[in-house]
Length: 122
Image (cartoon, rainbow, N blue to C red; front, side, top):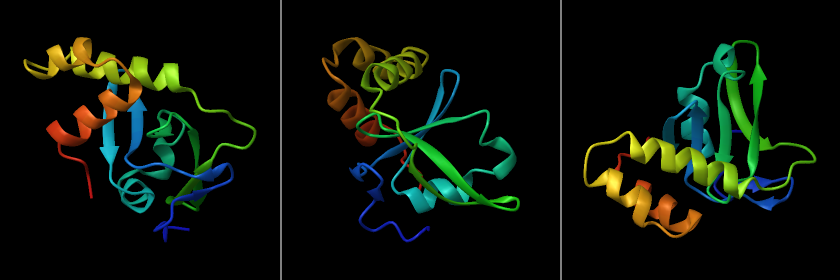
């Protein structure tokens, strides 16, 4: 399931980058495979996972390993929630990142800011 070149999800295509949020801490990943590689199976219940459009993701585990992610069954995109998480994350950062949180007018602008200004994990 880590072959995600098309980022196919149960609701169509998922949009990179992908996010793992734990409270106000957010990590961005360039692919589902990269996120699976860095998340431990015992941590899946403390993180919330999203694609760039706010689609909630569920981790797919095999034993103690995360082997992939898929759109959470029955879920709709949670754009407002992801936008709130990203704004909180940027607000905790030093300038100019903090300013970016207030200047961004949409989820897409926040995602673009994070992709451009922060290291997206490979």
